[in-house]
Image (tube, rainbow, N blue to C red; front, side, top):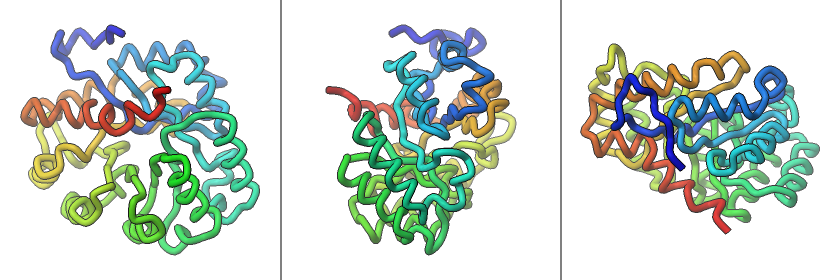
Length: 263
């Protein structure tokens, strides 16, 4: 497939693997699947890790463009589940039903913090990810991430928003957990005016294979930011060595998720 890249960045513009996209009910009601896919392609997105509340949005996008969409099973039937899902047996049944019916590359993005990561349905999500060989896309604090790895030392975790932690803590966690990756969604502290923050640069240079960009379309309005965010990301990644920029832009996502949906 040929990706149409924004002309302002030229023929050598970096493709984007967007590791944090949502297509929930408010989005699909305002932006039909064909329009959403066209917007991702306009942004030069080659693959997108997508979840939705509920999962129907996910399936609508995947049916429209299976070459582009990598489905992740969110633990929310509605957004109302965000603060209770980890102890709701109805969510447990929902996850098991969807996993029987569809194929995914991950479970998440889910919100869980502290000791709630050891709640019954949160533990089930970790077990299901292990059983089905899926990633866990966790919007979590450090304590919850540690609890997930205690449950399954071989778990593969994509840490949403890099935990909203400072780069020094992110580096500490990456050194400790070889199966931890980070997305940079909804963050702008790592770059300003096309220049990288020095501490974040050190993190990217130490772990060039552990970061991915992400838009985080958590509301329907955020979909209109997809192209702008992709171009902004290309801007600050130009301040990195080309091989590191390529890894963060798309190669890491390809390497981690690219084979998971193949027959």
